[in-house]
Image (cartoon, rainbow, N blue to C red; front, top):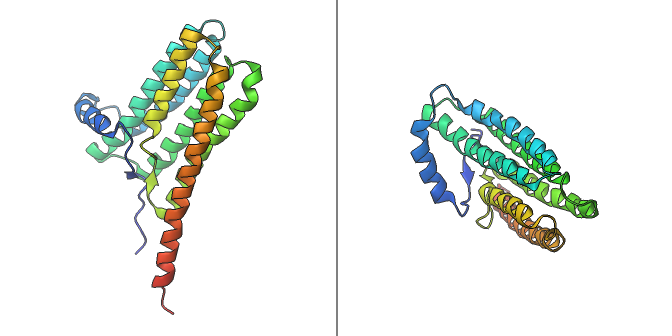
Length: 222
């Protein structure tokens, strides 16, 4: 019997998991009946466009980054509730939801980086490229690991999408307060921490898959 698709069942707990569960439980009764899971998923397109627009406006006034922060918060809320609504109402599109939800997560990440590209100094563009490559690598790792284990893990070392969004909110606040002066010191640190995190995550993932292969290998009849 083929293994059941488990793309809607996330494993691994992020730091704010308990608070998120409480927020979903409290908020679900207030979601209008006409608002379906796929509506919330597709709203990421609107939030992505907003991020790029506010990033463009922030070239002249960094206070526009408050708009970027509002888009991050709205994307967090729609992403948090889309699957919960589908499960509660039994109207979820599991495979479509897995595909579109995570594809649009990538689009949202790209929109953030595009938005910040309008405001960061040109001297940091090379470093900016490596940040994109490293953050994208975490997504690739999750998808490849799911393809081999049928367990979809989005949180590693207690850090998941919620915590990453929090980092972006912090970046916006620092840019508003200090403008670009802190970037020269902070970007190399962000790069180094992301690289160390990626190495740890890939090491643990390949070790888990290696053990699965060895287990299956020795279970096979001679």
